[in-house]
Every structure is written in structure tokens, then in C-alpha cells.
Amino acid sequence: MKKNIYKRNPLMLFVALLSMTMLVSCSGNGPEGVAKKFLELTNEGEFGKAKEYCDDSTAALIGMAENMAKDKVEDMKEQNVKIEILSSEVNEEGDRATVKYKKIEEGQTAEDTAEKEITLKKIDGDWKVSIDKESMKKEN
Image (cartoon, rainbow, N blue to C red; front, side, top):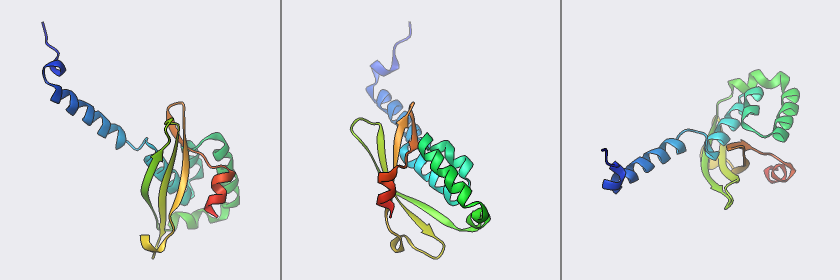
């Protein structure tokens, strides 16, 4: 009869749980990873791919941005833009998150750029960028 290793050694249980937590948090599926990927893709003009990381209403906005930026996509791909994630905060219910970041363009430093934020919602277990009128007002 096999003994349960975790009952014998609570440290093993702790190490196993810690390892799983680290894997999940580093997977890029958390709010910070999703926000960074979305922002990188939109800055590169990869609007179709960016739609995978946002909710339906935001995808519609991205579609409009894609139509407006058709002639600028090649220039966008050539720009050297870095997204620096500063922090994230998930609400008590665990279904909304705010990610603070800086968009650093070529020739700038983090100190030269303003802090911005982007909102995400948890939809069917996945974090999705959610841009609405309220968050657009904050950006301006």
C-alpha cells in the first residue's frame, strides 16, 4: 500500500503548490501577460492578432483602428516600442484587473513617459482586454 507523500511531508505539498503557482503566473495568461501581448501587437499594427486578447466590444474598436491605420501599418512595424508593465491589481471578485504600464518609444526612457493603465475582464476563465468609453477618457 502506497502512502500519500503529501501527508508525510507537508513541505512537499508546499513545494508542489508553489511550483504550480509559479508556472501559472509565468505563463503569460494572467492580466499582465495578456495586457503586454495586446499592447505589443497593437503597437506593431498586428490588429487581427490583438483581437484574440480582447473582449468583443474592444475587438470592434480594434477593427475600426485597423481600418484607420491601413497606410501606417508598415511604419508601425518598424517602430521600436517597448511596453513596460509596472503593476497589476485584481478586484476582490477576481473578475476585473487594472494593469499599469509605460509605452517607451525609441529614444525615450521610462522616466520620459507617462504611466498608463488598461482594464481587463475575466471571460470564461481567460483574461481579456476591455476598453470602454470610461477607460478611453482616462487615456486622454
